[in-house]
Amino acid sequence: MQVTHIDTEDLPPRDRLAIWQELGGKALFPVRIHSDSDQDFRAATRVLTLGEIQVGAVRHPSIRVRRAMPLIRQRDPEAYMIKVMHSGETGLRQAGRETVFGAGRLTLLDTYRPLEGWRRQTRGPASGVTVQIPRHRLPLPSNAVDELTSMAFRADRGLGGVLARWLTDLVRRGEEFDPQDAPALAAITVDLVVAVLAPYVNRPLADTAEARRRLLWLRISDYIQQRLADPGLSPGTIAAAHQISTSHLHDLFARHDMTVSARIRHLRLERCRQDLADPRLRPYPVRAVAARWGFSDAAHFSRVFRAAYGMPPAAYRRHVLDGTATLEGHTGA
Image 1 (cartoon, rainbow, N blue to C red):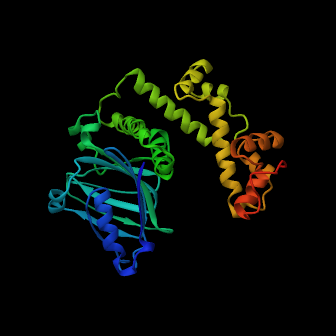
Image 2 (image 1 turned 135 degrees about the vertical axis):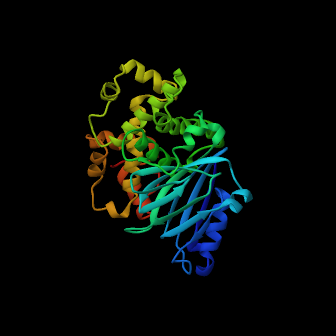
Image 3 (image 1 turned 45 degrees about the vertical axis):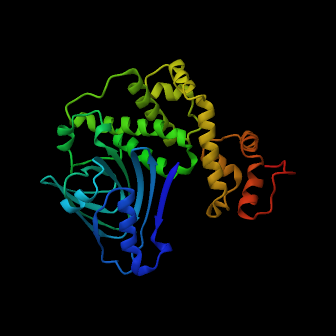
């Protein structure tokens, strides 16, 4: 999978802004950027390419941006871009509309129209995620979507929250995917963007069995991610929360070649593995890490962790943090 990463820490301070602007323009689309930190511009961007669709994560100091017609004529991907703020504050002006929004909100831009804006850091760098989708990939009337540019929508709850978390996780885990995963990931991303925008364009979401199934899968996946710490998370509670039968739930997961319980166990083990590799959490015993992510039985946790990663959790922690443990010869937790 193609992942482009740009970090100005690796560049000479005086060249950071210019190079970041140039490379960012090639990965997405060109804009003019001005910053009070242009002599030592500390920023990073990471872009995951899924065919025609790009998903990006960005952090940077306060900036001002402008995209006028000369830049549009220079390169226009004929796309919409959705921006989600994680931290900081943003102001945007496009098509005669202006909005100011902060963390937990998203907005829509049209790459063909001139725009002006600013992004201001508050506590630490400004940060967020974006998705750029060609206009022809959105099955919504473009004239109606155009009316939504420079408007702020919620990204901290509902489908907007699901979209924000999906984009954040997608770009963070970009290297985990194989090239053949790109079409499916792109299709899910488009479906979720359409689900967020459809209520505002006075046109219902395409009511097909596949579209409904994808959205249900996304809602359930997000529900599981948000409740991994709950020991009571089970196929029964998940099905009840989504008003479906457990057999329907199991059929949905079978389409993805997995079981519900196996998916929950895998996600919990991954969170535990990350915590065990975190030196800041070393004072916490293994059983506390396990309990934090829903494993109430320490012996069971040790067995499934060893089956997944080849060594017991305590040995894995020593292996990662001290480099002293090996895959062989460890049987304790």
